[in-house]
Image 1 (spheres, rainbow, N blue to C red):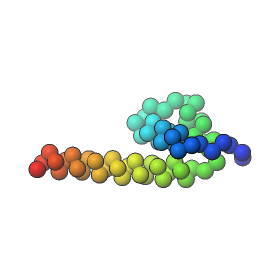
Image 2: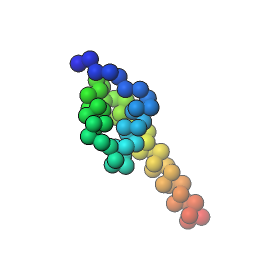
Image 3: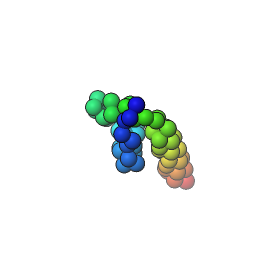
Image 4: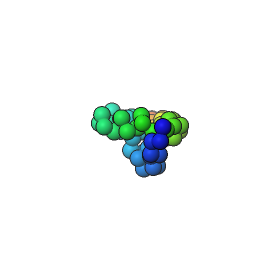
Length: 64
């Protein structure tokens, strides 16, 4: 499979779009044609951790 490797900006855009649920079918097909899912997994985990930390900070700030 000689699929073009997506750039960092493309991976960020794809993960963010998938997380909020607004990803087009064309974009999804392009993401699944990538040779390795590892960059998407790493960025997705990082986004999830950042999201949880931000929620914890907001809740602790509101309850303080």
